[in-house]
Length: 339
Image (spheres, rainbow, N blue to C red):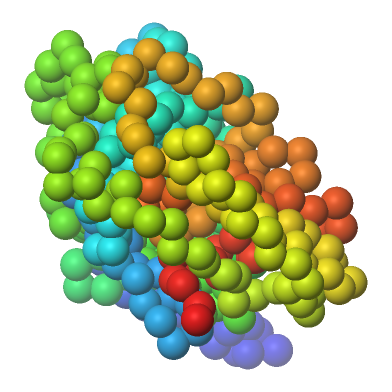
């Protein structure tokens, strides 16, 4: 009996040694401490990243620029651009509040939200660190260059992405990549950090709404935004069928209203204006929260989601769907016209 206990103790000891060795000689606790200490020393950063999203057999790529300035009120500026748009969007948090900006359309949406603290944000350095620190059941491993954490996510409006794998550079403890996974642990969203400038110098106008809107416009992008309305349809309708389509000519644009009926009834409205507002002063207040639809940023309201894409405004509404179901339908529109 004594001999068996000694053998068991030796096996346990060598197993611990193997785990520690596989993780580059550092324990999970020591690495978590290092990455949290590193973050505390950061007063700001600029990040260039690429995000890839998988939808069935399709992949979509997005360029992301993140600027962060630490202060009594932290400032954020997140630019998202996909390959199919001439002008992207910017999520901005400054002393005025939280906004989603569409520079080419000179449009601003202001949100009553505690973004980015209310949900996981895969392209924000501190969000990834906080997810690692907050998950007491996080799994820890390592390869030649990275410390790797497998953690739960905190996407309030999308429980279909419950897990993530976060990679930190062994030399500087800065995140280099994150893989966001479905319930079967298949990666559906991958964010790769191409560069990170720690503690950069910011200009006075870098987090000013008017400056960002003015700098994001070009004659070419505005002209393309003003093309005729190309009607788009969701590829996911949760079994509902299109029963009515109404086109309305407006004084300065066009509106299309589509009605889908089934177990989950919903309406999809698309509207396109023929002129861009000339002033950046107007801000549309949104009583909802920010949602990332992949190809664009949207706003969740009580019974619907609204968003803009390539110069067209969309509004999806339903009294029968959950927020997750609304997001599923909205994501499936994906800016593609079905003929």
